Length: 193
Image 1 (tube, one colour):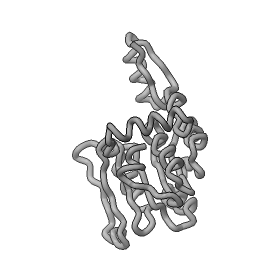
Image 2 (image 1 turned 30 degrees about the vertical axis):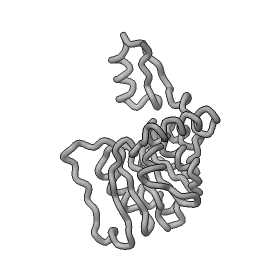
Image 3 (image 1 turned 45 degrees about the vertical axis):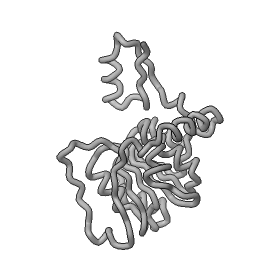
Image 4 (image 1 turned 90 degrees about the horizontal axis):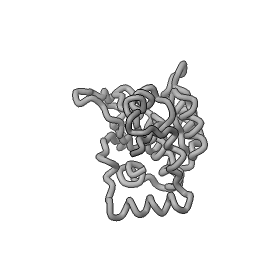
């Protein structure tokens, strides 16, 4: 959520794209909804994550399998591109796609963890008209301000957190829990002590 509120500084009426609908991406979708985005496009290959994205505020859902993902995003944005694109997977090709999906003056925020030696190819022609690409460190969260604000959003029902924890495991089953998370089962895997 913080990457949308702080790094992207999304404004009411803007359009947003979230690539990757795990826990981080679903937080970004909720932040875009709370921030007043009029169109929120979500892309993820997992049906249960696309369903969660829809229930949390995404207005357009894309299954990237078997589609030209960029064209599907452009179609959903009325061929204008998006104002804010969040890449929450950690894949350089998806980061480049997030940048390519931007409208003029749009911002692509890369929050997925990529291998340190990754390269993101950016066509120079897309740099025209003020498009930008940046990373985000923990959404530039301001702990003393942001955490209490998020707590209020959760308490009021504006932001939903509990339903993102789709499985809980005792500490002795931590390896099984990591396996479930790596296989993209559910959304958030919790370890209970």
